[in-house]
Length: 443
Image (tube, rainbow, N blue to C red; front, side):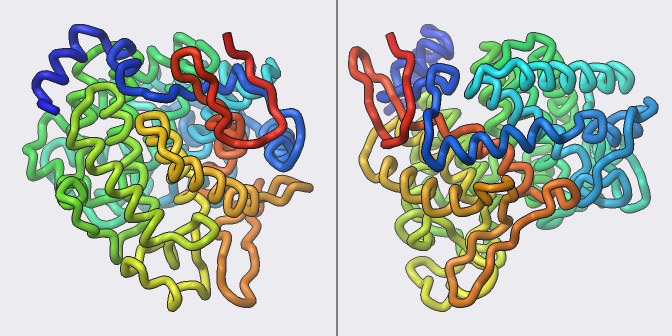
């Protein structure tokens, strides 16, 4: 495959047309699938009940406070607290994705109403700030992230594993807001969400465009979530190549390059920092046909699933990868983070659509039923940070109204996605990829 020819073809066909040439099995949109019963439906139902108990005004408190607007309610606590160095704002992003997905999955207008409410609030925050930024982060001293990102844009980059200029994984946190806006556009048709996302993307472009390649790579030493995925998807949604170029800015070369050369470099790395990077690679391949992207994504998937994962589909101990094919001494303790499996399933569904091989479908089923469904209490909807696999271990159920950890956030989305990956279409063929009580609207 000659990359230059591929890009030329993509330009001629348009993003959607080119994606159609690469997806060998297109997943049915979750708005065309309805669950009828069984454990997937139960998990969806208890999550829907939980989502309707949460208060959007409390999620937006930090956004409004940092923008100089009066909060409409006290903010939530835990990792979403407005006090100190937290992932403040991540829950509003997760929640916007979750209610948008749940609206598509159920057709219940209450979820669209909540999505519309959050988008309206985010637009107000963005308009008040005036430069496109829409976030709630600070450092420990209370310095606003917009100010700290200006330091980054000037080349003053203090980057570590989870810290960038005093902020806790800021791009990771902002990724959740970007993803929420994308999903509100894609699943509820909210045009304002796309408009806010574009302005927010332009702000990010302004930060990284001033940096040299070496400075960008230093910045990317801090966890940055799926920023490459977000901008690739924005390219798909708008057809504007500037967002594809921005996606490639968030290419972590020291991690991705060895994968493209088929070198397993996972040992000692934080699992959920890495998986979203390859979701972005797979998305970009679907939109452009760039061979290097699918080489990295495919090799990464194979190494994680075949050489680093437990029988449940989870991986990692204390959130980190170990040596390939050496799992027997890593089964005790805190193993198999739920966010990792949520993201591996996103990557798996994308890989199956691009290359519909049985091993992708097998892993989807294994990880979905053995880890994701095991991560939620079917009675009250509490979710687990870890689903451990060792001897004498216990599930760590989260306080769903106080902790607001990363796995509480991804759990909101995960159980709204159970209709995704059951059915695929290819020409005049309908693929049933997962046996679950459900109906598909396919014509």
